[in-house]
Structures are given as C-alpha cells and as structure tokens.
Length: 281
Image (cartoon, rainbow, N blue to C red):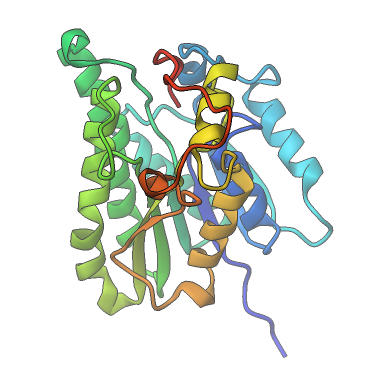
C-alpha cells in the first residue's frame, strides 16, 4: 500500500526563535509536513527588539535540531516581502523543492509604531506592501497551482477590531485589511476545498514587551498571563489539519480572554496605569 505524500506548508515570518512563526514552523514540521520557512532579518534588526543573534540560517538550524524523529524537512528562504516579486518566488521555491504546496501560513508582518502625528506616506506604503499586498499575492500564487487539491490558508491579524490601538496606525490599518479580506478570499476558494481563516493571537510576548508591559498586562488578563507562541502554533496546526476542514472565512480570536477583560476585575496589586507605548511586535 502506497502512503500519501507528505504535505507541504509555507510559513512566513520565521526570523526569531521567540517568534510565532518559529513555533508554527516547528509545529507543522512535527505533524509531519515539509516546511519552507521564510524570513527577513533586516526588518527585525530595524526594530527595538533587534534581530535574532543566531542570524537567519542559525535560527533555521536551531529549529531543525528541535524536531522529533520522523519530522518533515524544513527549507529556508530569506526574502523581502516588500518586493512585489517575492510571493511568486516563495511559492516557486516551495514547489521546486517539495512539489505541491498544501498549506500557506502568512504570519509575516511589518511592525510600525506611529500615532496620528507621526504618520508618513513612506511608512504607510511599506506596511501596505508587506502586510497586505504580499499576503494577497501569496494567496494568489497558492491558488494558481495547477495541481491544487484542497488546501489551507491561514493569515494573521491583530486586535484592532476589538479595541483602539492608536500608537500603531500603519500596522493596525494593514492588519485590519487582512482581517477584512478573509471572507472575500474564502468564498471563491471554498468550492475547491480550500479554507481561508485569519488568526488574532492576542497578547503574545515574542520579545517586544518591556518588564512594565508584562506586569501591567498580566495583572489585567483574566488568565493572569501572556499567551505563548506555542499556543498559537497549536491552533494553526489544527486549522491546517483535517479537523479544520469545516472552518472557513472566520477570524479566530485566540487571546485567552483578553478581549473580555472589561468584565473581569484587575488582579490585586496590578499597576493602575499602562506603561508608555514601546517596542511593537
């Protein structure tokens, strides 16, 4: 009896060991699936949290070392998603190495700390190019595969549809666009057995939070803590598997109850004032 070929996933935003993309790539490879992990360390180097000290290749090497026996193969592509040609190159690279791509996880993001007084046209354009245009073009390239037979597309948003985020306008404007695209992408692909869902992972500390951020949020979160990248990865694994085949066109809020916090009293001793905005994602 011939076994079915191993499925293949593309995961973008796999640049840092503490990141959500890293956890997703590890989780899917452990299913097992073959994974093309895409990264762009220069983005992180320009952010307050900085790039992973291992470098892009070192990060992927560390990921491979963590995989269990029998896991899928993890390939790597360092690529700038601000380049309009990048989405086509990503899908082509995955197909060349592994064959058909079955799962697309568009986890990448350009983070941007800018309120109304600090907006620039350049930053708005960059966030649009990476967060929205690249996501749409990745979906287009994924759907254009001539041998596509079902599939899973998972995009990422933030909490801008649940509460104000006034110090991150370029980021949340574009992440809001990704969320709003979900139903309109899911509808034309549903007849082909492709699901499209969007994940809001809630507050996950991927290295951007200050100690003050951690204390303030933990004191107000109904669960008393931040979420973990592994919890988000577990949701993505479920959506990417057979169990998630009946879910499509949805934005899934996986925040541990953070969006319900107005109905939950702060924990005793929690700081009264939020910290000054800092970092980003």
